[in-house]
Length: 82
Image (tube, rainbow, N blue to C red):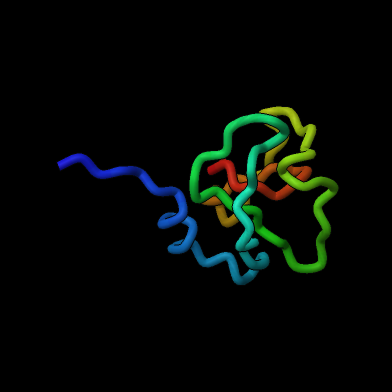
């Protein structure tokens, strides 16, 4: 039986409460590029992202690991890239 990988299920299992909360809005794209279904933006406590995913101009490796290397976020918009 073939199972489909669903990043949203993995994100839901990840406890991000110490950092913030997941935005419920699904990004249409990331700076014009594809966004896998289920990818979301983490709204970090006391932090405002410089861009929305659709207007983000971050380079592909302009990211930071959080939660001991279990969560990878775009540095400009907070989109999950794990």
